[in-house]
Image 1 (cartoon, one colour):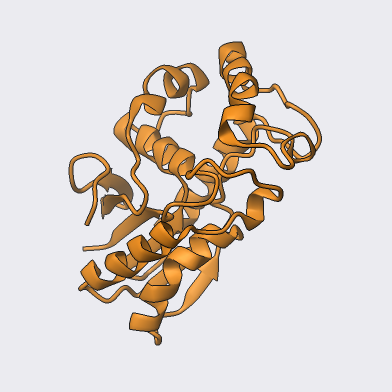
Image 2 (cartoon, helix red, strand yellow):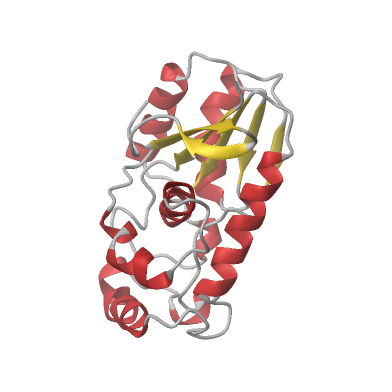
Length: 206
């Protein structure tokens, strides 16, 4: 049976509360690297395809698994994190610094709102995630392991759990953001009648 496992990256510098500059170049912490190594140790079934994002932290998380299964091909897909804050405004800020902007963004609940230069709307985020889900349906590999991000995993969970309905920003804000997505947490899905379905309950560790 065809399966897709979506895995969140290990602990990043932003997760640990450090100030960061380029959102795409945020690195793993020492803890994050340890989590990634343990993840690879637990990955006992060899995938047929690895997918990472263009963001450094997913590539670093995947590295131990790639070393374990060096013959498995790897592709870069646009399943990077939801960039709803302007990158230029976030330079050298911490998660605590950004919290008022985050709260203001979600309180608007406007799927077309763009915070500033380099940011994307919820509508754009929704579209690229759904496009990737659709592309996955046409892949022939039996086990695909995707290293991605927390918001992306919540969006995929919503899409699958609610019958492939268009992602609602209100539902995402009110319900999906309550879902815990631990670093190196996995969301296992399988294909039944060519449609992605949840194969295990929720998002958990392998």
